[in-house]
Image (cartoon, rainbow, N blue to C red; front, side, top):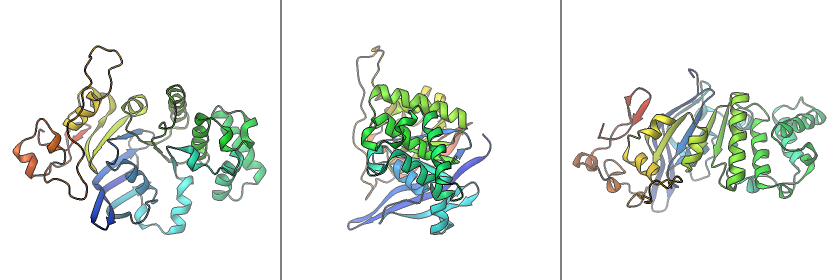
Length: 319
């Protein structure tokens, strides 16, 4: 893992509103190495999905990138024209959305989705060849080729999610952004889906940005974990060291909030307070109103995000 596929430098994303500007991603710097799975976790509304949409340049108006740089395979995505961005999406960067039923066209068959994706980016491929590629792809994903001409409503939730993965894999994309990919799945199908994604990642050496609030999914798949809170990155590190010894108080709170299925501890811990209002975030560290280890400095000065151990970075005055 020495060649970064994505390098994000001081990225800011704003949403202007009538009552003020919401900075949904605030000064985030991050790299995603080739062949790794990077888990991006945090509470709802912390900016995870916004970061993923910014990478694809698919922010919905009035959302806009207000500053920073995003390099993909050495090219600055913020300098690309509309046609260059259109060709990049799907072929080089693909996204698996959290609800496939709302992302797949209900009037198109599975084959139509896959064939259209292939031929849009590779017009030299005939319709017959594209259909053959689509059949081979869904077979590798564990869907019978007889289902190729089914409509989305005829498939189970797990099958629809596999079709979404197939669309992401159809053109051998360099980066797959998976935004809450297991949200709509039941527990059994989720386990099957995660096993499939792990096998595909190893088989195709996929680079995946896994956006989720599900700590278990991150533990199952990710190589490294980035933790976001209130639009900012607060901790980054390899998955097992971070889970074994989290540094940031927010990360510790997240992990303690996960139910203990071994029942060795009867208490379910929760974090006090609520996330801050991003219209008017608190001064200093944004987690300080909820932090049990808060110091005077935390209320006044924003901690820098810096490396405190080899491979471990954190934004906290405790370090």
